[in-house]
Length: 375
Image (cartoon, rainbow, N blue to C red; front, top):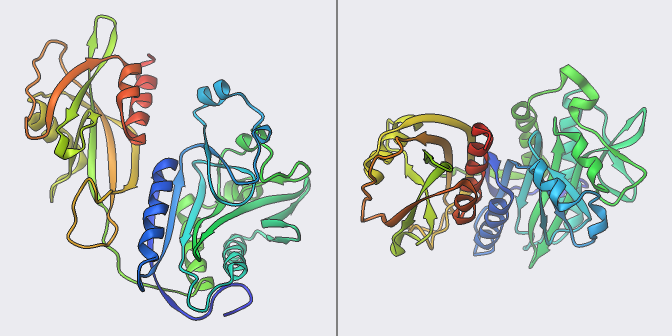
């Protein structure tokens, strides 16, 4: 083992997504931690981007968030308590979040080496783009000396249970730095937060380009021998709605008990050779007998597929990426349910539909439709 990480290679699987809603990310981490704890399964390195959230570590207090719940709700920022170390931090679009789900048993029982390896990977990534970052004694993460003083470019916060690590790092490429001013980030009142974009301006890399570099350095610093993975399945959601007398109404359908028994609008898996738009129209027709006008919601998100809901022939974790649309249908057209999938339906307003939705992506789709319609 090197001073900054691990040098003895260990099998690992790299899973890279784009948007993952924070609660879905917590479920993903829990499932992968359980997976790697069994036998000699490979470590997991998960790279993703979260929606706008404040996360509170074990040392955080409510006073670390300076804005009211109502203000944050209007701004679309949610708050989540976690079991990681540290205080409060921000995750959001434009930031690379990495979860190293590693089994440190068997001669690697040194969380300090994992921390230094994660920091080193971020330092090397910053250097690739001409930014000098380094460690700061007594302040975890990586820091950049700016005209305003030291500013944090990458944060770190881990949780360890039975030598299985969860949570990880957040590397700022081009997030909305204003959101950090609404909190006391990582407990520091005398230091700021920066990003590659705030340091480099127009020369800053894209999220994808920075993630490519960070991914390479992480696998090197953590001595990961990457193994093949099963690619995520793909699905669509078509938030089906009509213009009612009192405003927009969303079609909600109750899944039959063997398929989960929760309320949803139209969803379905993509078939080979289909593009998402084709799947949305096909699923709408098959599930409801309706045809409609399809519009993108500019939302795609990924999540872990719970094997208690969908049965799989082996223990390898499964993931899915869903592309979201809205589908407007005629006001008075009859709905014909597919009884093998849904037992009943109703039309309801946006607020009720939001409350009935079970999953984060479905709730986000309702909010995007609300914004699109100005409702």
